[in-house]
Length: 230
Image (cartoon, rainbow, N blue to C red; front, side, top):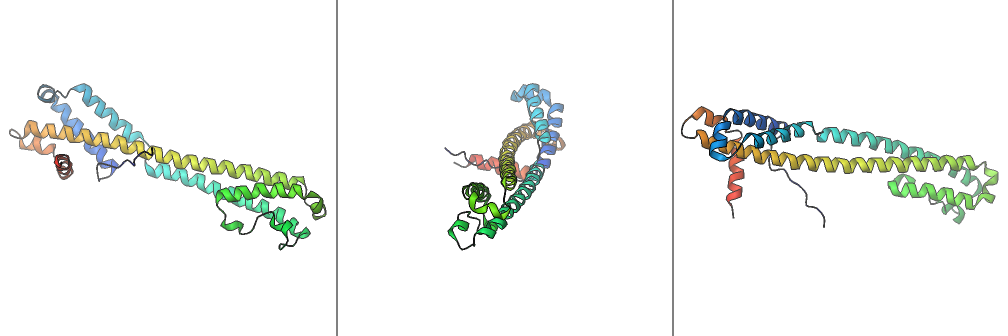
């Protein structure tokens, strides 16, 4: 079964979430005795909250991951162009032996090479090697030799490696983004809990301390209302 997409529970930047969470931790440490006695919220849980915040801020953000992905994508494009050049080098010699209207030429399958997908281009490169070797006797007088095919084979290998690296980076980015959202949601839930406790503690005795816990109250109220809807 395909895993459902993970969505953020908050609609503000991660940097703001981190700062709000750290502010709430500072306030909760000040009021920890009241958190413990009235709500069974002790130092151990607060430390876990703080540790999650530290993991969150140390995780690479999407800009970093996208940058890494772009680097390997550029390398894949370079490898693709080198593969096309190696294929064209072989096909220049093939045209010396066969008209491009003949079946022997079309067997190489290099038409519209610029429109091929990555997989099609890789398949094409390997097919050119295979077909060229099968027609070696007809191509002997064109200057085509084993070194050209070895160069093409190496270009295929380099392109396949670049493809795999790029696909791995895409997958890594998806995994990291999902992990970051999961952790951010946990922090957001704990932020709401801490702020709700803090407001409850000071609601009737200290307006200033109550207000200090009203961090992005509109988002908290929205979350609370959503939980109350059946």
